[in-house]
Image (tube, rainbow over all chains, first blue to last red; front, top):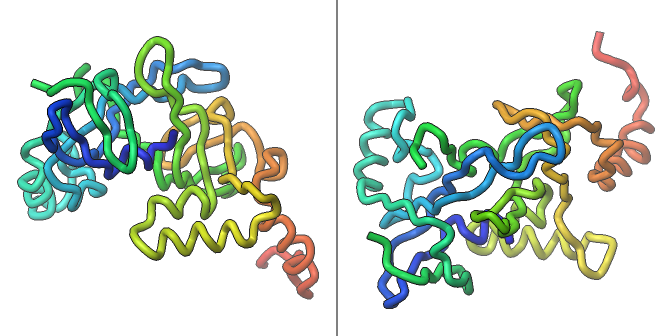
Length: 103
Length: 130
């Protein structure tokens, strides 16, 4: 699987409801370390209602940049949910189907 | 898991320049390979580069044409993106630093062929700018 299979994918809950679009992949640096660095491990999908402006990264806390752009992107992505990748049931046809409904 | 101990894969890794230990440019990170881990999550196992990796990320016809052209020009019947195992990565910063040179990785056959058969034959191509 590739990161691009997840980024931009629609996310649907177990009851068929649309949760949003994957705009980011939250990682920790605790993967296997066979070389110089521990491999990044994707822990959660960052899901928002829309995809516009997500590549700029301003929807995340602590990002600096032009305040107007930052405010606009944060307003567009104010309803952001983190979905544990363990709750992924299957990925097909550009859609991530969850095994449950996140809180 | 808090924001402090996590990072965004797209912002940290995708589209970053890949360089060798001497800083020579190798490629860009066009995509990454993810494998489900036994102890949870998806682990990055390789960096992917080239039009077959970038194409699927591009929107609409541009992406489809990029992949189609790359397939047409590829050598084998089942072409794949250039793949760099993540264990080759020694640093993740503004660039992704590897422990091998491009020649040692052998991942840019088209560029190498162009350099050998075209660029090197241009008079003056071996001279450093002075």
